[in-house]
Amino acid sequence: MRLTRRQMLRTAASAGAAVLLGGRSAVERALGTVGRTFPAILQRPIPSSGELLPAVGIGTARRYDVGTSAAERASLMEVLRAFPELGGKVIDTAPSYGAAEVVVGDLVQEIGNREELFLATKVRADGRQAGIDQMQESLRRLHTDRIDLMQVHNLVDTETQLATMREWKEAGRIRYVGITTSSNRQHETFEDVMRSEELDFVQLNYSLANRQAEQRLLPLAADRGIAVLINLPFGRGRLFRAVGDRPLPGWTAEFDCESWAQFFLKFLLANDAVTCVIPGTAKMEYLVDNVGAARGRLPDEELRARMVEFFDAL
Ligand SMILES: NC(=O)c1ccc[n+]([C@@H]2O[C@H](COP(=O)([O-])OP(=O)(O)OC[C@H]3O[C@@H](n4cnc5c(N)ncnc54)[C@H](OP(=O)(O)O)[C@@H]3O)[C@@H](O)[C@H]2O)c1
Image (cartoon, rainbow, N blue to C red; front, side):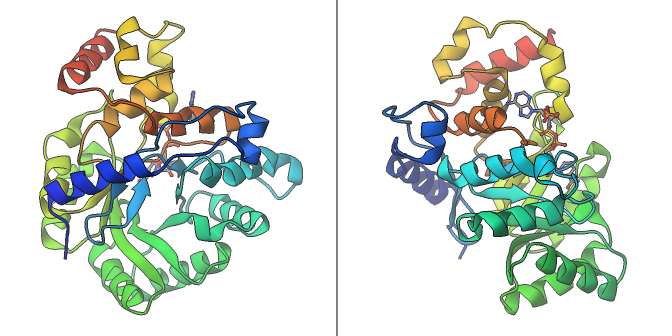
């Protein structure tokens, strides 16, 4: 039974009030924040199940494509260990991100925090058997017998892969199924699939610099009760380059915004259709900053309009 929009908002609000992080973890000690009480972290429900997800995740494209040496993996290890301690859960990877899926699997196994995480990966293959082979390889690489979310990557062979994914879901090897895109040119076809298939999740590109998803895909996801992950929330870093070294405007204090990253992420999270944003995060400093966007107030409609006006004028 899918949650209605109203039930979802109510669940999210009470979850936000319930989850308070203490001040005693290794992460907080490392950050010198002992004694500081963090405000609640925003969580949003997955409409098809009601399960709550923290609203800021981690994307692993490019930066997690590293070798096997401890030196290359040190900063990623630190991030993946700290992430659930800071209240996070969702990690998005893919077999096509070079070594990223292997690196996530190895590090999570070494840290031993698999059960605290929600692992999302993808399948990009032509034909039923090729898809099955790739998904089996993902289970092996991630050292798990169950993937939380399996997504058809960029609509490649969608119907065939979704059919297998549903069988795997029945068998308990996948918990949720979805599709992804990161290109505005695919949005029309993406919308068709959202209408014709039963999906738990969609993952799509949306940022302050690229708001096309607001027109049709996000309202449709809310109407059909589909959870939404947001990729490219910083336009692969382009948004930071757009603001340069400008200081944050004073009015950003009205929604508890402490950095440009939080400015960009809070803009997206203020859209009720968004379940979780997955910024590419490979440094501890960025992790703390990005997860911080799930704390405090979000901009209301008036402030969101002001953010758009500000950004478009750059
Ligand atoms: N079709 C698909 O399914 C698809 C396509 C694209 C992406 N994705 C997913 O979406 C995720 C996000 O996309 P992305 O990683 O390509 O791009 P992104 O999240 O839009 O931007 C990542 C960039 O932002 C920088 N950054 C991150 N946090 C920051 C902070 N707090 N302050 C300043 N800079 C910060 C990073 O810097 P550094 O470079 O210094 O680390 C990196 O260059 C991917 O990792 C992937 O999981 C899916």
